[in-house]
Image (cartoon, rainbow, N blue to C red; front, side, top):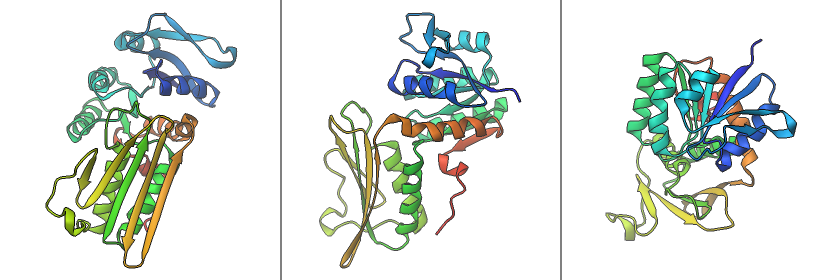
Length: 268
């Protein structure tokens, strides 16, 4: 069977480098090119002496030259907005892990996928443990009236709250079928400081050096609390989810939003 050929967009960033180190070792996948806005060389080395692949700041040129099946994009929202139409017009599938995309962006990606008959996978989080955490939070949301989320990330993360925290809160409210309660002292108030409220779920954002990516969901009711927490220790945790998305996106034209749609999780 022909391997799935890949181009990494954002290849010189932290996630891009992690992808370049991991993907060549996966059976059935072939890394054929790389793109980065800061590219100065015309190639980038693969791990373990596996050779080099073309590198460019020009995405369209790399797509025309390397003819990949999938582009894996871990950049920033502005870069993804520019890249997505180029990728789709070339008839190439995309796996997108960019944070900061809004609902309008997701709608546009869905339109591009349909117009060009390609698969586009978008996920706020590619960590399998985080997806399970979100799933458990949905189940617990049916049984508690109060809930808060604390998400903790490294100090260089620009956006807050995180996409994962916002998605978790929205899933919880959807599963509950109505807003959560707020403490009496906060009813009718806008959130203060580095935070946000989503239908009664207050999200607290922490940004400190020494952290990577962490989230806890705390539920409370009379006489008891329930804590669901996930911790990311190293960026290699994203690779199983990304690889699963790559293998599936080539089979599924249209937009897939959220890794949970590939995991066959059962509702509680």
